[in-house]
Amino acid sequence: MIAGKTVVVFTAHPDDEVGVAGTLAKIRRAGNRLVLAVATDGSKGTHDPGVSPAAMARIRTREMEAAAQVLGAELVWLGYADGTLEHHREALRERVFQLVRRYRPDLLLTFDPWRRWEPHADHRTIGMAAFEAAYLADGCWYYPEHLDQGLDPHFTPETYLFYGEDPDVTVDIEATFATKLEVAACHASQIPDPGAQEIRWRERLRRAGRPETDLYREYFHTMRGTELGI
Ligand SMILES: [Zn+2]
Image 1 (cartoon, rainbow, N blue to C red):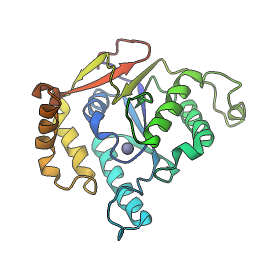
Image 2: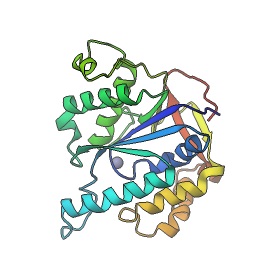
Image 3: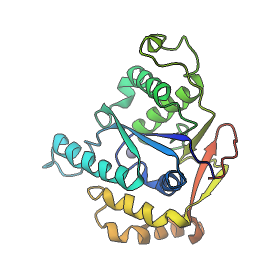
Image 4: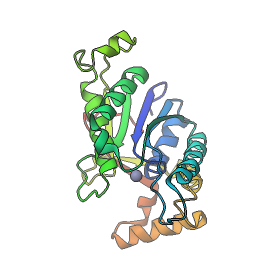
């Protein structure tokens, strides 16, 4: 198991981290620095027209803060409105390059931007920006003004893409499954009955024809195939 490393996660919304929370808890528990960068405020995460986007953003900000605390993660907000990332593609890309150069991750995790039938542009957009930054932020002529800000180029040795169809790494999360449930329960506005979360996950696996043991596994596609032993 890796230890003493910096791991940075880029997501689009508060609660996007839930599906990989077992792995994140495992990484943190082993003694790594964990930084969770969330691109938007989650302000469109309601079906109730009586709840304003501003009110929703306040609720989801608090929920995300609670989830980060459970994970022992440092939380970084990129400050975009929910559902707008593709309209800010260039500014977002620079911000992500900046963060990669500031935190200098040994491992970066983000959405698989090529996930088939992914309906949410925010997921595709943050995935692509973070994926590019992991690979290209070591190029000094990408945003050379960062040098004046004291941010040197940085190459991220390994990237794990999550929620895609083509995983090549399986992480056993049995030891941190309880923490994953706890993280899920933090996002109460998105999960009507947090106590039934495990039952819902089991049902989803059954419907997908996957074994129930998958409840204790999380899957990733690695970019360089580095053996991290997570
Ligand atoms: Zn999302």
